[in-house]
Image 1: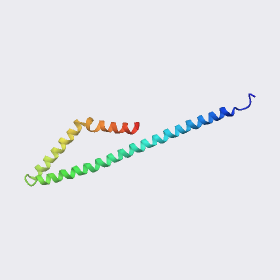
Image 2 (image 1 turned 90 degrees about the horizontal axis):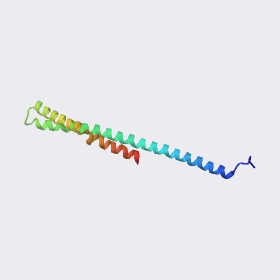
Image 3 (image 1 turned 180 degrees about the vertical axis):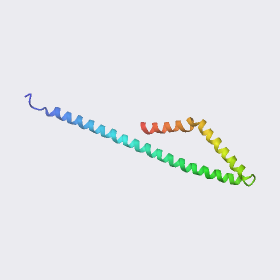
Image 4 (image 1 turned 90 degrees about the vertical axis):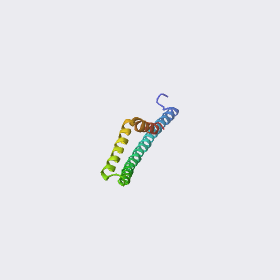
Length: 113
């Protein structure tokens, strides 16, 4: 009697093993999904920053050209450079509110979903 295998105990063990295996596979797929979502978000933000930087540069050149109608060319470009430096300083001063907090919320939202 002691040598016989309990079929019910074996069935429970097999089901438990399958359950653990499926949970592990689910965790792997969920992690892969979150990594893909995070990397795609980073890529979209980088592309938007590059295109936005190019747009700001071209708008700055256009405004400088318009200012050069009334002011000397060197002064209009200097004014636009000063405006860009002021915008950069504002961005650096408020980087936590403008950059860090939104990025941390987005990453947390991706990871916790």
